[in-house]
Length: 151
Image (cartoon, rainbow, N blue to C red; front, side):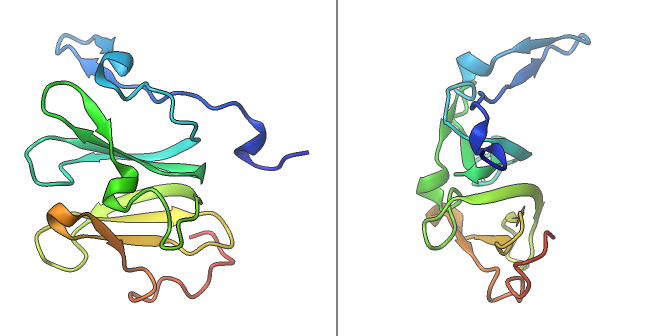
C-alpha cells in the first residue's frame, strides 16, 4: 500500500485565458503548461520571477520535482525548474511541496519564494539571484530547525 500521492496517477496542469467577457478559454496545451511532467502539483503562484515583464508560473509539487514555467512572451511557457534551482532541494532530492509565498525577504528588489513542505523536511526560502536563478537560504535564515513539523 502506498501512502501519499505516489499511488495516484499523474495529471496535467491547466491554464485558462481570461477572454475579458466573463468567459475563459483552456490554453493548457497551446501554452505548454498542459504538457505532462509526472508531478503532483499543489501550490501555485504567478509573478514576474525573472524581471522580464512577463508573468511566470511556479508550482510546488508533492513528492515530485517542483516546476517553474517561464513565460516566453508569446503565449507559451517553457519549464525551467531544474535550470533555475527551484525543482529540488540542495541535495537534489524531491520534496513534498505544499504552499507558496512570494516577497522580497532580503530587500534587494527581487522576488524571493518561500515554499512549505510536508513533515520531515525543512521549508525552502529561495533567494532570487537575478539571471543566475535561485539559491535556497532556509538554513541560513533559521527555517530548518524543526523539520518534524509541517509549517
